[in-house]
Image (cartoon, rainbow, N blue to C red; front, top):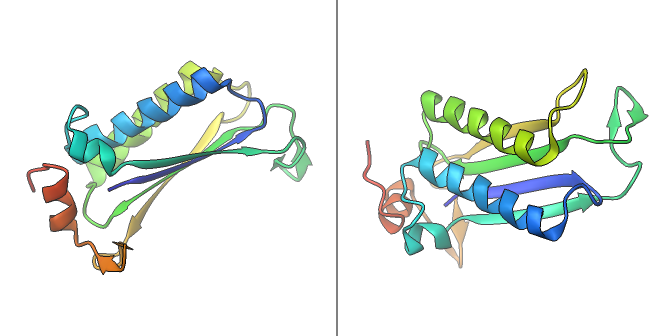
Length: 143
């Protein structure tokens, strides 16, 4: 049950590329969590938001930048990713971003933040969703 939030400079990607980026990121998270990218139940639990930042509102070193980096936050329940999984996901995100925006010269083209929500703190629809229940809904076999 990951949540993906991408913040990008306005106009960085056209709609077709936005859709492809979000699909690729969703698949990368599913794969890293151990879910099948073809499982409809698992896919239904990947929520992703693409938000554009207005021009001249992203700062690097205290100054606005013409070609701002992407900011990608992936939030998962505690225990959904181990250290190897986080490394794998960070590498996948890096490769995906490079394909869509190309590498930047002299600085990063994105930040990726991998957050975990404490066990018992992921909730929706008025109920708590423990990791085991989320994994069962996504057809993930616990390690």
